[in-house]
Image (cartoon, rainbow, N blue to C red):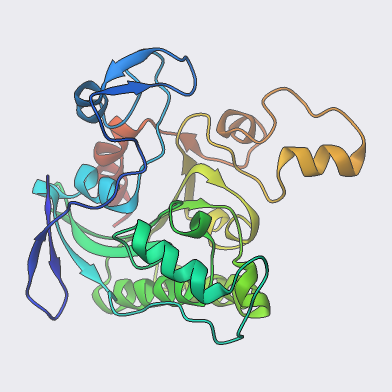
Length: 280
């Protein structure tokens, strides 16, 4: 496993973060239903060896895959959500946050890190679906804004890896404000011609899709990822019509011009290095 360095604390900690794939000896693919060993799966970048299905993984898994020697500096680790609206639906928001902290070793639905890919500096903000469905609240928006500022200050390219169910309803309008906030911040990168890469993974939906996920200089996705604003079931119930086959998959969006390309996870590291070489 790789190691990460905590910013300003100087502590090196093993990246024993909770995986979104199951622990154990065996893994049964959700797509082809075939069984392989967890060792095979991990060695294959969490891609099913039988059918190529990309298993959902967390932010630190991406960091280990992307960064040289699995080494990186985690940024903005002190930022954490809190219930400033005293919001309660089926349960209080404070309770939902406490449960998320207990189940995960990440402190928010997005984690930001700086490291090198084949010797080239890159800032990566990667979302974690395991943390309240990867929902975008005020801290997610703030971390993205600060990641952009870090890229601006050092002229490093930025990669955002999206994996989200949408805006965090428990923060009401404050979560929706993050759409405008992140979009406005990204214009600063564009003005200085600092590359912003947007990688969409399964799922990328809601306010994330309606803001920063679709604003990359290059927008690309993992194979067969669900990408859209509302989900297929909601759309079908609204328009009262059957949807096209493969609707809202990466392949469908590529065919209709919403993506620049689709990239397999095992090729991502080299592809990003090539893109940084071309665009810087």
